[in-house]
Length: 211
Image (tube, rainbow, N blue to C red; front, side, top):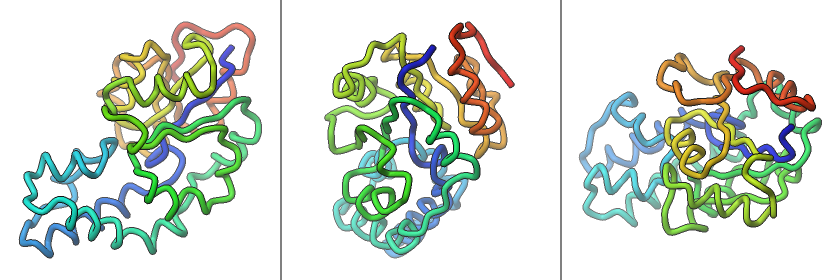
């Protein structure tokens, strides 16, 4: 039985990925960098700062600020995936490990009705190294004072899975926002809907679980 359920945020709890990608695309266009949304999809699951480093942007602080400002109005009313709220109400200890920074959280997530459900939130500002490095997830375990084998991390990206595996924590794929789960061969669980997570409250935890 898992005593703690740690979630990624974007693409797992909130349906924000298109918002972030379109805001990034617009910010890049202002500085003469034209990218398709598909070309920018690699950025999902890693901090914005790292994304701009990979894109070799010259003035990263200014571009990052522009990106965040463009997505802020939409993040204030970002949709929560259907079924998530009902599931969160039935789970025990909850936490979030996200690649959003603290300003992004304040602009969006912290204004949502579900924010009080979570005992702790580890964001990109809290650790020097980020997903897929295990440090963010290990910090969450430390803050919650919980053991690895009692915990599951649920996310929608390869970075999330690699972070969990590096931390020695079981991983479940949030498949409700994905078109394919073929890359998640190392996942312990694949959840087609949020409600599927509730089955892990059973006393005897299965060794493998794909719905």
